[in-house]
Image (cartoon, rainbow, N blue to C red; front, side, top):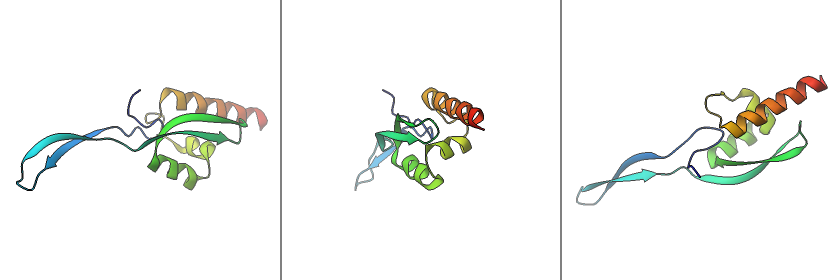
Length: 96
């Protein structure tokens, strides 16, 4: 399982551990990923995603998963998120 957010594309970053004596050793900064089930109002079901805590706040801020995916860039989304985005767009087009 990769350590990449499915909605924002955030992944591990690299940097240094710096001791009091200024000795530097390489380290990784991992994103704060959580397994969550987000509800889609259009599809009427839950979608399981592995997203960062920052992405979860963004989803809440934008008003839910459907609204977030409508504005999200396709290049940042994972294959699972892209599939869900297309399902939502298709369902919204059929209902309109």
